[in-house]
Image 1: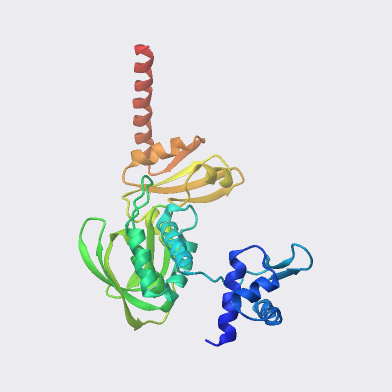
Image 2 (image 1 turned 135 degrees about the horizontal axis):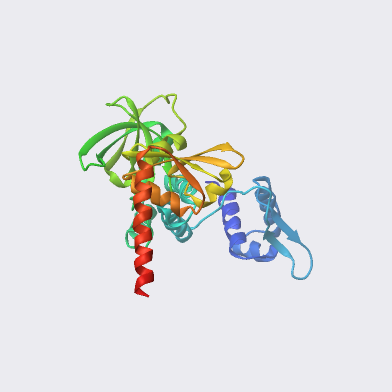
Length: 321
């Protein structure tokens, strides 16, 4: 690194530490003339940093807010703090931030020195959290798979299936998808020669190879994962006609687990799956919207039985009071 480049980076670091610096103060810190400071300020501006200058009493140089975000300069402590925060966000602890956090973390981890990477991992491993319905996913697993998706290299891992069976998988990873509760990987299963989804919390001993693959034509990852987790694992499937507009229904229901299709301006078809028809009937009642069961016919009988039990409980409650 040349002396000029190193000095400009030191100047940028100083400007990030305080709101305003005078020219003589910066020159004194960097042991150069004020003329050199002015040239270095122009170099920063050419790189996209909006350095503002004001004359007179209380004036000086300061970093402003530009149209675009320029590169940030972080010291060791700041880099560790950002990486730890991103790991927590990628784990689903920050609503809606998981995928963006993982992408940013992958970029930061790529350039972070090993000594800082180990410090980040040590801090993250020392943190426990309470509550939340999300499944715990190892941060290193997230990073390994995210980089493999980016670099188009095959990944090998052990996997525990829904029925508890342990298998070994060799896949071509395409995309990570976060649902808010869990992380899923859409990938081409090399041995089964088909597209598959995998829950990251069920993976073990994940390792990326050096075997690069050519990207295949593939389904939309978000749609593929959505269909897989909303229908495939369950034995009971239902269609329900809801007498409300699509946007109204979407506000009452978690759309990650169901499929909504508009029938007309005031009617929506809901398709959902569950382990039992009773769960499906109960779920529809919880929407608080008028609905009618379309398929399967057995759902009507299950709903009648559920209604009878609720009515009996209500009558018993009234009698007790």
